[in-house]
Image (cartoon, rainbow, N blue to C red):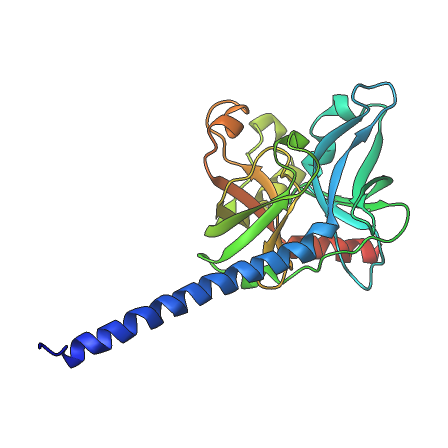
Length: 269
């Protein structure tokens, strides 16, 4: 009888233990994301316009989320500025509405008003009426690192899949500067030159798929459920329709610290 060597014995012990450790790590990561989704989901809102003569009466424009800030109060929603102003035909003569979830999880339409707009960073702060809705906390976005695993949540494809929040994983592939397009020579004024000089700021480039409708949704830490960014655009090849049929998997998000600045500006006012 040939006895196994010490090397074979050690290897046979190591493999099952290694597999167990890897499996445990994956299960813990999945549990963290599941817990984070439970925290974030009640705060996700649908942002759009209501007009009784339209068909349908409610037109979704994007996603938003209720932000938690003990110094601000309740029922404040953060979304993208372009969600509000991207289509004049939607908003003309219409009422701004956010749909939020009540304590039972049912969507409820609430009248909303625009409090602050930061077009440079594509952000808007809204407040809606009615009973308080739970909010999500903002995290220091300067702590985000390239290669970090995050998640995003929203209503992809403009609610075509229904108004149930959808979550996608994403990895920070790059933290890169964004520069606004330069105006023409005739448009160069002291104000526009200052805007160009101040218009470059870092954003998160994500290896993750978002769709039209995700704009304004939160990018969040899978460990804590805290928001580190706001989805604001998807890289598209060709037409807008190709964002659905041929998604590039490249998405961009505005760091949450710019939201903190917007909140501070509102408090100061």
